[in-house]
Image (cartoon, rainbow, N blue to C red; front, side, top):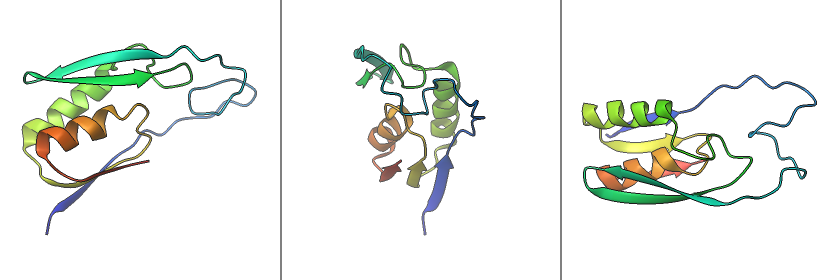
Length: 102
């Protein structure tokens, strides 16, 4: 039976302030493409205002991804709070596995 892995971030919510994890109609759209490369495999992600780390793949996610892939884990993955889908998409492609992203 395969392993089941969960990625998530716990955030504190401050009332009356706009955050990337709150749907805010006042945030203007400004889409951009983020590039990422892993072992000569290139990825592109569309990001926008209102998304965590909207301008680049954040260092924490990159570190988590590299540590996970280094372990050589295989199996189904659950990526909670997946944002632009960086972790789930890269893991799915590199490990050729099923990833559920919420």
